[in-house]
Image (cartoon, rainbow, N blue to C red; front, side):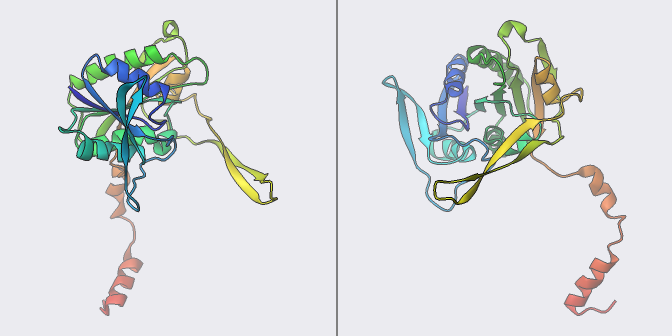
Length: 265
């Protein structure tokens, strides 16, 4: 099985190395990752300047390709410019820090998996909570086993899998839960500071989820010591609201459209 491996923590991240080793036991891994950390870049892509990549060696052995772009860039370039044949699976991670709740929308890790799904390739994002203990070797091993099971089944169109592993020792993990994304917000703010020249600048602070009580969510499951597996899809249409839009009174808008066209109703 041909596997494209990427992340948003950068080509030298320890989580990427752990995932590379584990996936090497089930397929041929091509690692294509950002040359620098790209956390929080979401689904940004590079189109105003060229993308470049270089080979990376670790302990005198070839490891992968470092890309001067975002995680989504890495997937695009990996498939269209680096790999001779398209991958059969895309894995993004292991990210250092859980990607649950609203963080999913900001995550470069999840965005890379979304990009793979957009391109029609089964894709998985893997993250580990680092609020306490992070066992990367076990996280990579258990993620590999979950991925093997996922690959036995065909993922629906527009869908990817988001895996989050709790921050506990391997003997303390309680099991697996199939979850939904929590949609509650989180605590955040800006910290106003002064540079040496006396000029004001701001640093984003916060980002901790405030809702862990809601059963069945990714946040609650990781908080309770379970591995969370959440199917995500990139079709953001609100189909329930779509059904009701035609019942709203749009007459004033339609009259304005006719007015600009010079049509009298």
